Amino acid sequence: MKGFYFVPVAADRGRQLMMAGGVWLSLAAISIFLFFFNPASPANQFFPKCPFRLVTGFQCPGCGSTRACHQLLHLDLIAAFKLNPLLLLTLPFIIYGLLGYTKSALTGQPHRRVFIPPFYLWAWLIVMIFFWIFRNTPWYPFVS
Image 1: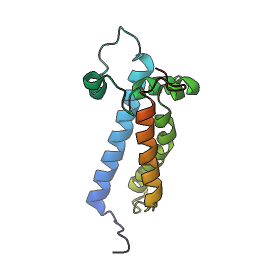
Image 2: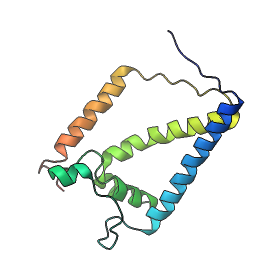
Image 3: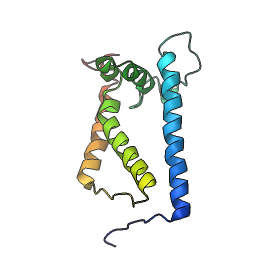
Image 4: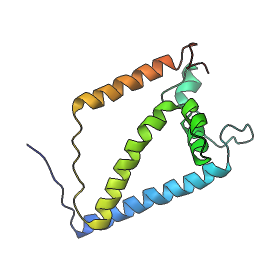
């Protein structure tokens, strides 16, 4: 099978629009909430704790993402990068995918198929694993 292109029909387009709209509204609500409430503040106990860190005491690749997003919303890129550099490196690709899906839902055109060679996906996975390991070491720049 060389490739599969999905052409949305009217019912699927409505579902796509609702999904895209729901995701954007959720992101807006979360962003507004995160803008006003600092997850690093001890007064804010309603932010979830990382289950991996609670069980093992080690940081996972996602630890610090909520605090990094808070810093991003306040336009402090350096602080956000220090909290979770992997998030900042991956975020443009996530946004690109979401914008592509939204464009597909709005125009009714099939979602553009993007071919990513397996090499890049494996490379990203290896980077994530190394980040996971080295962020739990006492060596600079990974000192907590």
